[in-house]
Image (cartoon, rainbow, N blue to C red):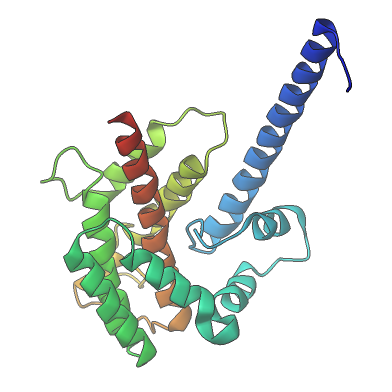
Length: 232
């Protein structure tokens, strides 16, 4: 049996701690890159994205077309990842009404009723986001997201932190103030869509983006629910 002195044990533990800290810092930087790339294309950090995919997006210059990659990711094998995403939403601890609405959105999606699907998913997003606000009368979703982002330290790697950062970017774009007398934004805008001013041709991937945004929120809901249980 290998016997180590106290000094040797301390040296090994110190080396392990240093390596672990370096790994966390490296992953934090990778997530920063991934969130930046995804946000540019209107995506939140997908809960379904595994570590290999995160590292691939972060560390390769060959993956220039994020949308093409995510289209493959969510539609391959007969939309299996999208189905997993929808099932994850329905299994999460959100209100039953929002689960039912999500299921109806999925039915609309399967029937290629993309405008119906997208419009209803906006209600799901707002319904879940409102639960994170201390003021249940507050309907300012951008404020809710920014407040959550501000609670995280500038350094340190957590999935929650990066999901909220990506979500904040997503909501800022989705809720961008628009002049209805000007040209419509090139991406889905909540105000144009819900106020009946939109001529935007909503497609399959627009809906998957929104399903993904819902699932990202549900992931945070699950984590915070577990944290609350642990505290109790």
